[in-house]
Amino acid sequence: MALLETGSSRQRRLPVYILFDSPSFESVEDIEKASDFIQNLVEVMRSDPYALETVFVSAIICNSKKCESTELVELFEFKMPHIKLGANIENYFSKGLTLLCSKIDQEVVKTTAEQKGDWRPIVLLFTKNIKEEEILNHLDSLKKCNISSIGILSDNTIVSDSVLKQVSRQVLVVEKYNKDILQFFYHKLFNPWRNDIDYYVLPEGLKLI
Image (cartoon, rainbow, N blue to C red; front, side, top):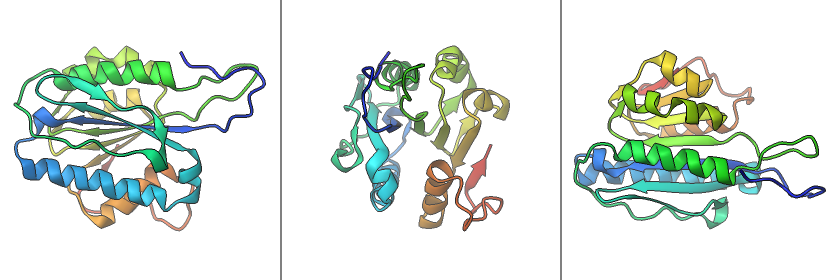
């Protein structure tokens, strides 16, 4: 559990965790589309002065052999690792969730009576197949992560809305990648208080849970 030192004037961070489950993708083209979405999202964040000051990013990449993660770094320092197509092996997404919960517990600064900790983390899940059993197996740990919002990029999410809502009060599922969805996706997750965007009119290919 990460804690700020008493009396520290360190700025509160907004941790963003990207979990990429490459074994679930069926082709290099699918991985490239998802990787492009991530890169475009990072560029949108870097164009936002507030995000540039507060957002810290870490990526967890699961391939056909293991799950690895990058350090939680400032947005301007973050570089998405190159992702290769891996063999379709089950349970790697589950291992990725285990690593995700561990990193959040260790890296996100908790609020105490003496000081404010980091903002609640945002989690982005990139996978072609999310099974409800995998979420339920990690439900207690995910609840403890106190996740602010979850963005899921998957065209096959076999998880009930009620289960996802136990993990986070705000869940966005992207079923198609395009620029219109990207802008809405970013502002809904990172700037939900904006009054110049109609959040009740969802772009095609986006589901709000």
